[in-house]
Length: 389
Ligand code: PHB
Image 1 (cartoon, rainbow, N blue to C red):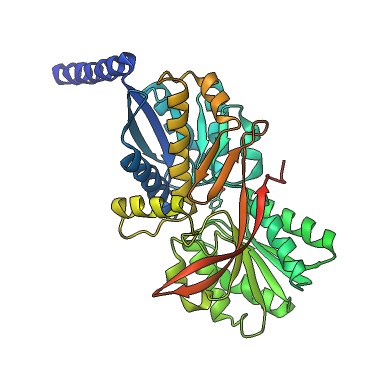
Image 2 (cartoon, rainbow, N blue to C red):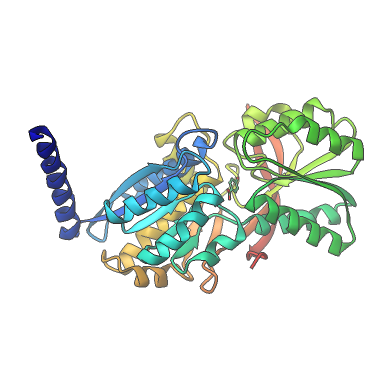
């Protein structure tokens, strides 16, 4: 009994200390809800690495406030875990911003909570169009599947492709990708000869890919989340010999993600994708990002999620500067609406009405440069809005 009450006071004291520090107003707390373990653990690593690289490059103090990162692991697509952690970040940790979200289901689950708490929330990956409509306190610095898919459909048709089979992961962003590709490609006169949706968890690609091979399309359009699933898809594409049959792989850049591209091996050579960021993007901003990132993580190659982590922190620093360190939620949202940044991926802007990102979408080809594979950009669609709104 005595031990229990001692423990209670220890906890109470710790809470008071934290509260006092927060009230003293000397910090800006940024709560990360990210996948740090499980199949999607790379997502959280990329996002937190990108944010950390930004802080290392720009200093951990802005407008007289020290930036404090609090990282919480959602463990995967786990809406209930995400909700509980969001509540803790708001009530217990008293964060000023909630950021992160590799996966759509976690972002959607948290939307009502951040609305209720009036907590500025920055989506650093989750890419289903509808997310930003679910709360006036959500902005997105990543991308939407519709935004990168429509350019792919246009590029494919313009380059003579007429019969396509679609393959997507069966959840929000995959459904957006399938819908967008079908609409844009058939509007131009192309034909969809078949469509398949694979499960998000542990998909067995072989039978799906075989079905596509048997249908003999000219190309497959594919979206699966970056990382392990992309590696699995590429492996089946190679093993089932689709390339040998002349069936091209056209995809969103998630499939040829910089983080795993070397693991895809030479079978990825020549694959065409559309996306917003490539490590090979040639700009001073990207060089600065890559140099800063290399000091944070020497093993994991940075990808589009790392860049969104970087840009999300850039947005927070800008809000802090404009509000002179006093983070009022509604004033913060006002700064975020319409915000323009020179991102490592190129110029980006937050649409003031939709709070979604407007950015260039690049067409890229997987090539070997030196000892490594890269998505080499060769064409671009300028200032693309989310067509899914
Ligand atoms: C998502 O869950 O919204 C998501 C995850 C990984 C991606 C793209 C979208 O590569």
